[in-house]
Length: 338
Image 1: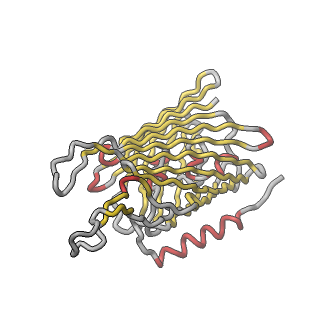
Image 2: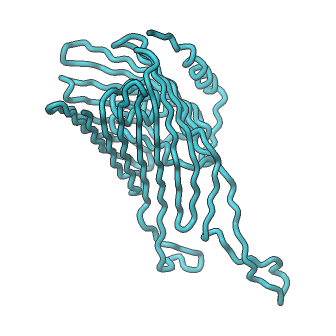
Image 3: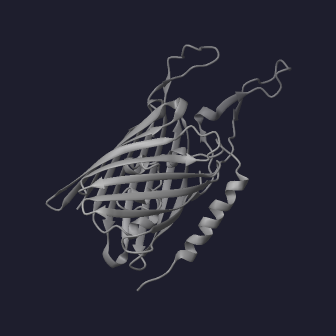
């Protein structure tokens, strides 16, 4: 059975591209920024233009529809020393379940390490230490509806903690991938982090309140609480395409381009390319978030190794990404399929 689901992708394309003319930055208005840190070293090296790729387990992060294109058991691990020495780790597993469909599990962790508590009265430190941490757990399901068209959905639980205060919420990712031809053009579209608003709560927000500081003799230490506003998750629309071209029996070029429409920033585009040799070694490069207002990101580059041993396929990838005045980030990914 073959379907032609391109009309399903068309609304995404029109919606994303039509909004370039009405860009408005809302940076800093959403929670869950850890959900926007891309986990794949391969994809990052290609400028994160990956909504139409499905060659590794981490592809599900960019497009849950990739679950319908994968067919082997697989695991993926990524470690990155993020900006300001923040530690970022990502782990995922993919389980093919036959005619039922395919299952996907992921865990994302981010930790700032210990930070000295400073106040106006004690600018050198109070002797206390605190940390900022994020945890995201994902559960996904996807399947191929035809030999060329696949869909997927992923539910994510997010928890953020700052010292003794925290928030938690749920988000939903949905995506589709369509292969125009077996070894040709691929189209992809996804919506990430569509979910519930949330606000912080915890004992750090408990205060002592003086109802009227001008009066003396009343209770100047009434128990009170600072109420924080609820904020939404960073919803992100992605739409893009990729095109593999084999110009020699041992050489292949893969080109990819994505367009992004976030709810907390301006629209942008990313482009990337990969050259692979003997299906064992790859060089990659790209540019991320073209046209993004006040962007600090730019060039990306990386390389990868692919090794097949008795039915086990090992992949090791490295990427470097420029972050302007914030210098750069580097990622190391290890994948195994069998």
